[in-house]
Length: 290
Image (cartoon, helix red, strand yellow):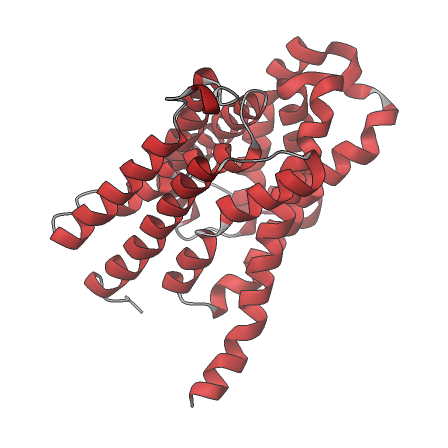
C-alpha cells in the first residue's frame, strides 16, 4: 500500500516542485528587468501579460458572478497586486532569498493564527528568531537594506491577505476566479508601471524577457498547481512550499550572482523549519474535512 501511495504522490510532488522552481526563476528574470523598467514596470509587465494568458486560457467571461463573488475577487486581486508591488520593490534593496524568507512570514502568521498549544508557541519563537537573524543588526549585514526588509514584510502581510481573500473568492469557484484575480492585480499594478517606466513598457525588445517572467512566475506554476493540488494532501503541499526561500536563494545565486551570509542562511533555515513544523502540527490538530 505504501509503495502504491508513494508512486501516486510522485507526479504531483514533482509538479509542485517544478512550479516552485519556475516561480523563483521567474523572480530572478524579473529582477533583470529592473534596470530597464524599474520594479513597478516589471510588476506591471508580469501581471498584465499573465492576466492576458490566463484570460485567454480560462475565458472567465463565460461565468456569471454575483455581487458577493465580485467583492471577494476584487479583494483577492487587490491583495495580489499589492503583494507583487511590495515584493518586487523589496528586490531592489535585498537579495531574492532573503526577500522570499521575509515574505514567507505572512502565510506562516496565517497558519499560526490563534495558536495556543506549547508546540505552536515554539514554532512562533523559532520563526521570530529566524526573522531576527535576517535583520541588518551588524556591519557584516550592511547589504541588507532596512527599507527592503520593511517592503518584504509588507509583501508578507499582503500574502496573508491573499490567502484569506483567495479562499473566500475560490469557494465554489474555479480557474476563472484566478484569471479575474490576476486581471484585477494587473489593473492595480499598471499605473505604478506607467509612472516608473512610461513608454518603455511597450518596447518590443522587452517582450521576450517580460513574457518569460509572466510564464515562469504566474501562468506555468498556476497550471502545474491546478493539476497537482487535487492529488496531494494539503499538509504535504504546505511542507513543499516551505522550500521556497531555499529555492529563491539558489535562483538568486545562479541567475543574479547574489550571495547570502551564514547568519542570514541560518535565519532562512529557521523560518523554513518553523513553517514545516507548523504545517505538521496544524495538520494533526485539525482533522481533514472530506
